[in-house]
Image (tube, rainbow, N blue to C red; front, side, top):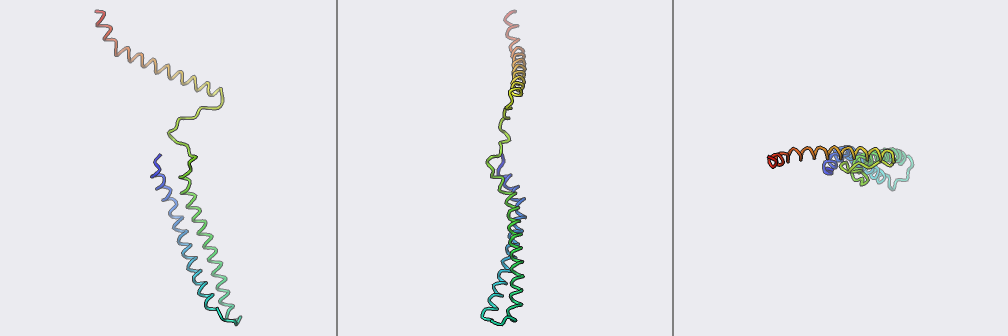
Length: 142
């Protein structure tokens, strides 16, 4: 199994999702920095009329930031779902021999097929050996 190629394909498929997640997290961080600035601008202000517009904007920014964080988490998860299954150790080896059937009738049928293949191989081998050694027996009799 070519794990390197498999990993490169998984990374290529997951990268757009991870990039989107990173961009969304950056955008959410920008909003959170703006929220911190707003919170600092009303520190020490006790007038409710002056605080109200800032608090409303703060609440709006918080909702937007939370939505962006959720979208970023979903994008990260989408990329992870494409990437991490390559490390699944339960995956079967494509080059491993086929498993034998559990059903005795199917097992007997598979056994008979194998016996037929063995007999056919033996007959071909006998004919090849006979043809290869025929000239030794012909020259000894003459």
